[in-house]
Image (tube, rainbow, N blue to C red; front, side, top):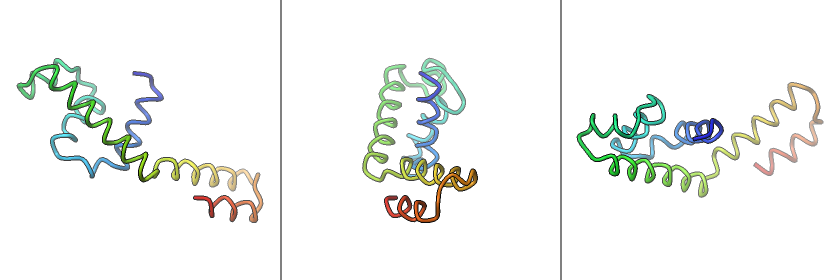
Length: 103
């Protein structure tokens, strides 16, 4: 998995993690946050590697679907971009208002 993909998954998890079940969060945290392999997780949870793979695939699909519907990460990126522009004074107040109305 590419670093950008991992960062995106962690950002989605930060935003939508509370919407997942406890079991889904557990699988996610072992794999993405604790960096355990599928085999290690399967041993810990006494399930097959395939079961771990399917659970993780399911969790990723849930996170992506939440983002597709709610677009919270997209909005967060737009707001952060505006904040950066404001800090660098590269944007006028009128432009800020227009951009915020779009969010």
